[in-house]
Length: 79
Image (cartoon, rainbow, N blue to C red; front, side, top):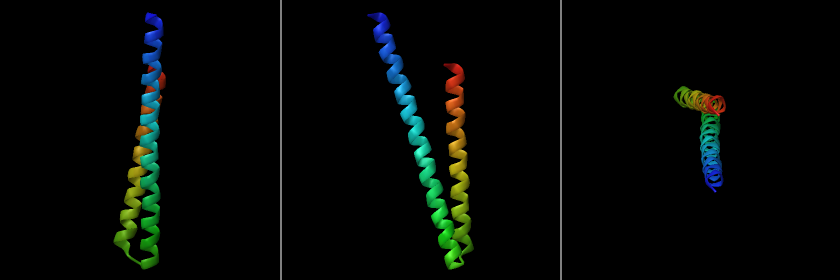
């Protein structure tokens, strides 16, 4: 019985961490798409500020993806 409870807790914790990681990656992907669209709008309108803001969002998204990947790697090492 104790093993069963511990196993359920471990599975719930694992699932929560996986979901949190997926949410973080989804947010980063959304930010990247937003940045690409903003950069494209800047290109079409010739607005360098909009272009730069779009590129900045893409960099932020890449950093977020990297952070999520590092978290996943650390979790794998610990487990």
